[in-house]
Length: 599
Image (tube, rainbow, N blue to C red):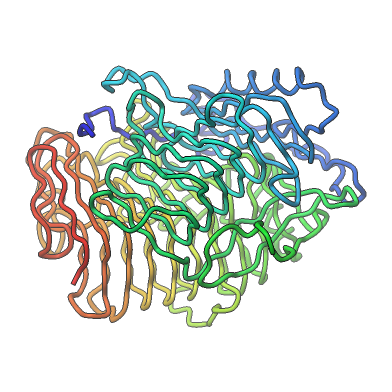
């Protein structure tokens, strides 16, 4: 695999400004009043999910469905900086369609079982032209799209899903071959599969890193570049790190699948809330699966982007759950979740965008809250934190019913100069983190990114004990990317690029030496364990910048790391050590430094 070049820059999208800020940016202001509400799906009628959600049944002409899919793809294929959001939902049945997904597009089935909705054709993501890639094509910026709860029977030789971060595949049955790269060895940079089954082989190709959790592979998983992690995957390749770069955990220690919409046998719309599982392997929906608990959609406030934070908070305070329909929610105050077991479910990649320097979301230290399927964008006024889980010094046990965050993606900068000190702070014990991408922009509109422009110290801070994270992607922050202060924390798969843009070593120097480690476990921590960590360096300013350690942790028997790697991508300088004093330098030219076990 050739080393990456400067084209491996990550791209950030979306706006999180107030209506006035939008006008100043030349963008249309939001309408002042919300549209009238329609049906809630309780009586078998389709609910009113707004104009950007398309619901189709098996009697809908295939030409009509295909025309919608083609129109959305044409609009969203290059709309990385846009504010449009869409969801296409299929009722149980069989469909002859080819769904190509662009930015901010979700395709999902509405069956109780993935096989209830069969797409005979494709649900796919293709590569984008990239003149910097030797192949002329890449998937390095194929972000912010998803597929859920359906089966795909490919009519081509495979179903292509060439993605990078923030593009999850969940609860999907691929009845054939799954292809994860853009083609011809074009670059691709990591992704996530959970609760899914692939009948044929999976062609990983150029994917540099990937996490597959609680799934089933019917054929071989081919190839791998730096960091491929399998947790609770039936048919996973054997442990092989670093060559091949496979980290294989036979079971997932603790997991709970993401909530999802479905239509029950009476035609009523419901939201499934899968239960907590321990030491599991394979899907939740295979042979012998147990019934899944569900909530009527009538128990949800179906929000529109025109709803104010005050209105949404009123509904949450009444004990209602929240379904966020597609769009950008400009928030003059944080949304507050106070009741146990509240579900906040985003549909079609909605964005929460604070405008006044408050957080986007604050969750009380209560049992069973589920936050899933949302983007969070720092606003033009600096926020101390974007999402806070529990209060500092929270000590209540949630061992039997944890708070969970799934497919929650943070962004700072890009379309305008957003700022936040920390993106995610987890104070509550036993919290489950499942597929997070916290990202400080290295690219965007002129004047919206740069060392003193889109400022952000840290992506994720974990203060609570007994927190488990699967798929932790944290990149480009200006100090430590991730700080773990809680005891007995576990991370299964970590992917991080250091900031590209430190202007000098003096500007990027921590209390413990040159640069800031990406993954820091606090000195007082007695127990911590992590598997499959990749930390990458590309310092782009033409200055020799060094990071002394990619992972920094107390050296003691209870703090353990398995299968960590550092990589020099391009640019100047590099990383001296992988974990504390272990590992070799990756400085000045392409190289990797694997550490199989530490200490």
